[in-house]
Length: 108
Image 1 (spheres, one colour):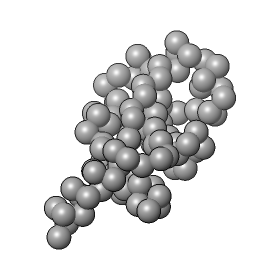
Image 2 (image 1 turned 90 degrees about the vertical axis):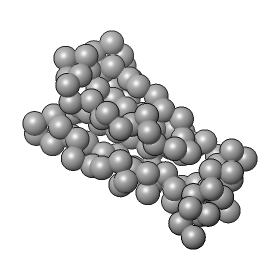
Image 3 (image 1 turned 45 degrees about the vertical axis):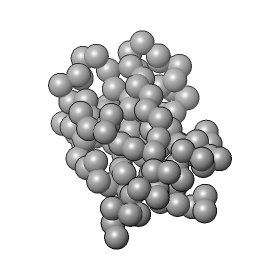
């Protein structure tokens, strides 16, 4: 049943009218702590932002710690995951994917 739901979700995500974008904010100096699984998220577009090279984007989105992952739907922030004090992301791939899946299902 779960496989069927995932297949249906993938098919519907191709025709969904809304756009989900996952933005991974980090900095080159913090590359060892990047969110390695970010590219494995499905049903969304992935954008990488180096805050050292894009300080205006950092300021606009109020990024105070890296890495930070922000999930947007139709340009509006829906959920934010931030690193802990050691600059390490504790949120799991599963947690992020669940948010994306809920957003995809909310269109139907």
